[in-house]
Length: 123
Image (cartoon, rainbow, N blue to C red; front, side, top):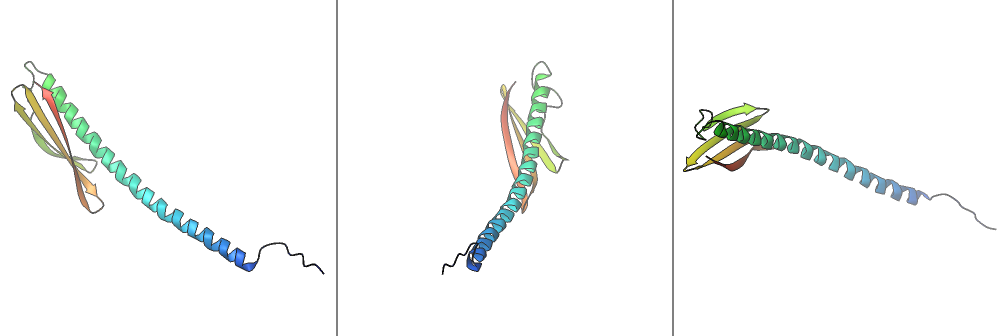
């Protein structure tokens, strides 16, 4: 007499369920991490854009007068806060070169994060 069994045994089904569960848990854990990374990237991009905007505004102010770098708006300033990003900037003129340093600060996961953009403008 032949015993024709088709299908899965209980042990095979249990192993498949455990393997599937491990995969689902790993996927759920990584999706939370990806969400945090996207949020952090969003605020860091906003801070970088603010620093670049401030540097370009100062560059336009420097080039708006003759002789260059004598405009009233071409000076140190801050703090200014917009979109949860605080900006401070320092303009230091030495000879015919102005060094502009823009510091942006924003909230991070545990505290604050600060980035500094430094550029030079020919006067």
